[in-house]
Image (cartoon, rainbow, N blue to C red):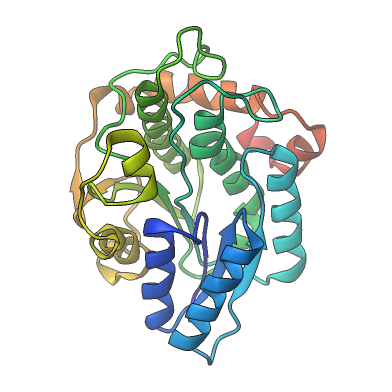
Amino acid sequence: MKTILVTGATDGIGRETAKELAEKGHRIIIHGRSENKAWKVKEELNKINSEVEHKIAIADLESQQQVLDLSTQLKEEEDKIDVLINNAGIYQNQLEFSEDKIEKTIAVNYHSHFVLTLLLLPLLEKSDDPRIINFSSMVHAHNLDTDKIWDPINFNGSQAYSDSKLAMILFTFKLDRIVNGITVNCLHPGVINTKLLRQGWGAGGSSVEKGAVTPVYLALSDEVKGESGGYFVNKNKKKPTEAAFKQELQDQLWNKSIEMIKYQEILNKIPDQFLN
């Protein structure tokens, strides 16, 4: 039995992924912003598999302080995390900023997961098959201005979303270069009929069941055990945009992402090898 943390597990693909992993006998840490929604998902998972004590973990990913609090709680209460699925995401139709003065799309979709992942590495390292799975999208941008994404001059919701998804690929590829003993991959789940899709692009898309196929595969399959640094679509490794492979761009984003951490307490908890 694996312990699997799914961010954004109270809705859409995240919820379906959590359900399917529970059906396969695994213990889920259900992350969400809403405690009511998280309890409903926990009740669902308990019906699917009552042998396991699933867990709720509440945090608003717009807040670096709440991300820190979440990681602290998990490190106090968990022996290990086997799989971290960084799924949570938003689509913004207008420019808004997080409490840390970062544009909300990049804050939630990318930077919160960057911070959370680095804070949870000690728990992942205790697993005998630790895996990090980052949600990206086929609509990821073809390039990235690592200075302007945090506070865009001319905001466009679609561009902000695409930027956040390229950032997730760059993060995946960079982390794969520098982390030892943990596999890290990213994926495009498909064009799935979720609240996010409807907000950004209107109706349409495939079922959430189809959207869960690749994350469940990457979380559990022996076929990808030891496989790292990949971008997957429909369970197959694909090639993202050329910019994703540029180590200079990966490094620029990483360094800027460290710079955008607002709390010394977070920086103090990140191993030095990831700060340089």
